Image (cartoon, rainbow, N blue to C red; front, side, top):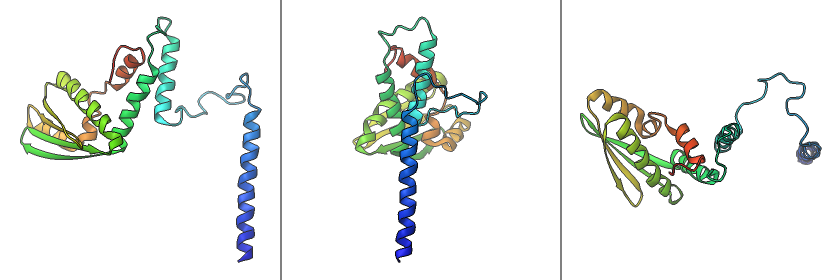
Length: 191
């Protein structure tokens, strides 16, 4: 039993010392230091870590590259709020689907109190976009638990596609999110 405690103590001390070493070495990092020193381009990860942070890095980089950016109108906080809505919609919800007839499907999307507002903002907005781009007919019903979305399509092939995609695949259709995010960052668009 005492050997086990000695082994666990040794491992704990090693972790602590490693953490102290990493902290001290990171403190020595200065703004003039290059993260690319000694490495050829492309050897480092391209993602900024967490997805929301990575999206913000990309958008801010684009804004900085654009000499015409109106920094007085830029709304990064609004974009962050929208990205959080996307996170809650994908991670903190459940969706069921029911085929009503050969051209109609219904998605019932529900979530926790945290994700409820995200569902009620994002689902109708995306449905309106898809209605314009594909001509499908939508009925959104806001519920205490989320949203019921009924979609009527032109043929059974489109219904088969929606059935296979399910709600979350439907939310990815006609990927307009990147352009929408850029417009939000510029202060030209809301949720």
